[in-house]
Amino acid sequence: MKFKACGLSRRIEVETCIENNVDFCGFILNYPKSHRFLPLNKAKVLTDLKKYNTKFVGVLVKPNEEELEIFSKLQLDYFQLYGEYSNQDILHIKNKYGRKIISSIQVKKKLDINNFKNIEKNSDIILWDSTGYEQSLDWDYNWLRSVSTNVEKMVAGNITIDKLKNLVNLADIVDVSGALETNKVKDIDKIKKFVKEIKEINDEN
Image (cartoon, rainbow, N blue to C red; front, side, top):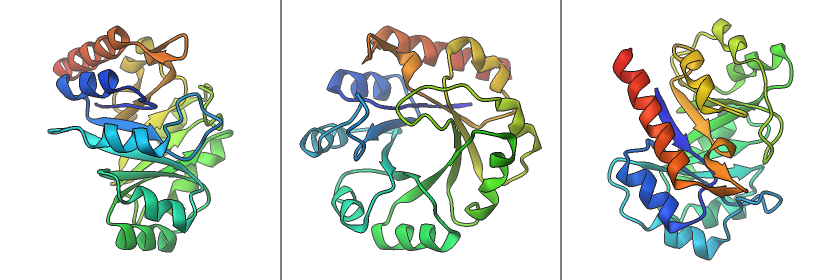
């Protein structure tokens, strides 16, 4: 199980993730409604940090070409896209901007799970998330048991530390944000606790 810490906005948060070998750091780049939104000048500073084995992810909600062009100048490994995309759209973005793609499926009902079939061909990772955007909403992760794909599976939506063991064999990557916060600010101790718990789970499996 890999770990993505999302919605990072301070240097100490990013450095803590890198030092603790968190697999992915996520930055909210074009969605100012979120309290985790990162202005461009700040995003540049944080994504310029030496990241070693950690991958940097730019989280983008329905970005236009101008935004994609701007954010392609940042030291990002992935664009995480929310919106309606086809396989062709994803291939175009990958080729034009030179980034791997995390394609997001927003899940409200069980049938939504199968929307991955429209974008799996050219996605590097598929994320199943709640419909809440900046809100951490629950959904039934067990719906993923019916999914068969060779693409890495990421899951998000109110993932708390006590739910991690139930996600083994369901998801390759857990995407966590709200559960890493205290009073809407990333809590360094909570990040470290998630790292420790995931390491223990991986050692057991």
